[in-house]
Image 1 (cartoon, rainbow, N blue to C red):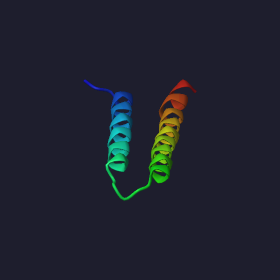
Image 2 (cartoon, rainbow, N blue to C red):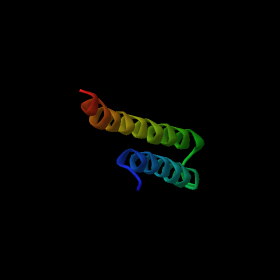
Image 3 (tube, rainbow, N blue to C red):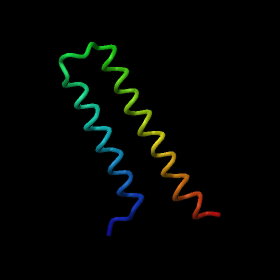
Image 4 (cartoon, rainbow, N blue to C red):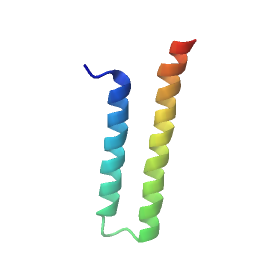
Length: 62
């Protein structure tokens, strides 16, 4: 059976993939704004993974 950390990892990868794909397919955004949106998507996912890590793994080790 798939565990909770594996589900979190899969959700992070899928959200990055879908977010970046949606930004790249938007014809109304200039290239600079597309790059900023992609950086924002990656940054928020990274922060979310850090919160996820410290919530589930650091609590278990203490």
